[in-house]
Length: 471
Image 1 (cartoon, rainbow, N blue to C red):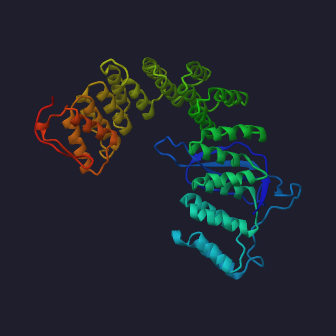
Image 2 (tube, rainbow, N blue to C red):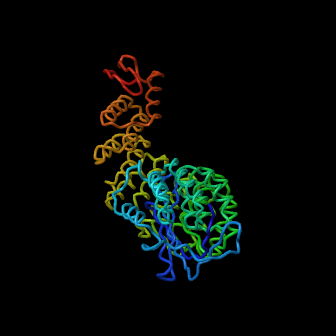
Image 3 (cartoon, rainbow, N blue to C red):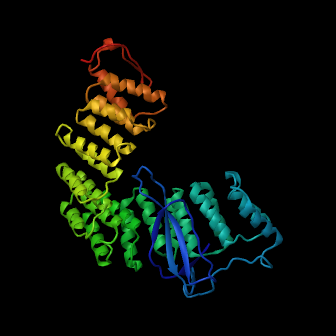
């Protein structure tokens, strides 16, 4: 497989969380084309890992083509074959069938298409390879990915850089990170998408040291005038896991020189949380105070940062200051502040004020806020209030709310109530956290529940409950 790399200066990168797509505009239509690729998102999120689509607009007034082994050779970009003498009647029928047919079954998507093309002695064009690569990327089918890569290698096709980037992503999405790295190392030319795919791939594979190493190497080989927000967040998160405060500060300085540090709310929020997670109070406050305007995202990041630093008193003060500034609060803001209120030893008074504020602005019916309220009241010893919130939750299928209520009962010594809730969860087809079930087992084993309560534990969390009193 030969590598063809088409170089062109890039401009601003926009990021979207969506399914994978990769498009290139026709070379003959305009002076602008677009290159799209997919990377994996943050694994710690509940929605993750999802796919992260990166759309890279770029100018391409002229195209230069480079081949492995001959860096000076140039040629015109490979054009799609025209529907006349370049394509046989058989190929046209196959192509039309592929385009108009419904979504193929897994048994006839990649291998069968390639086998049919080979049997008819037809060369597979780049656009069909790209479609098959996209399919393997979305399905994360490592077997088909390996077959497709081998077929492209045997074809002798001069593979352009956009298709190489798709192959990189395909291997990363299929968990074949070593294969992706081998392909990456063999590429004579790489663009930002090539580097970013590997950086995000290593970060999602929890190999944060290698992600940081590649990011540093990229700085010496590419001239990046503007970083996309997602790559900044990815590298900062890697710095947190490796406890590399110095590299995070260097990245902050680089963003400041590029004029990006105070322009994007997502970047500033990521910086605030980065300093907070590494317990660098001065850094977090410096980033926040340098902003000329604050919004919900930056205030919430400040609250989360203070929670991480266990400055819970400051968290509640920030929450009230946020309200006085007229900043709209989000469900994530309330979830964060409620976690802090649960740590404040004031009998739940701060939490009650937050609850009242949520009712005032109509967020008290949000499931995430309700779950936070149940947990906060349970930790504050206000089990009756926790029950009142739990009873009005509309989404009774939310396991997190049930776990919070069971934990609240256990924390306040109401073990029989906790067991009854576990029964109800089982009847509803929900699986409680194993740690919660273990706490109930421990309560039975250390005598906190007496034997005359006829409590019997069998096979996981199947309980037989009789009558009795708590000790």
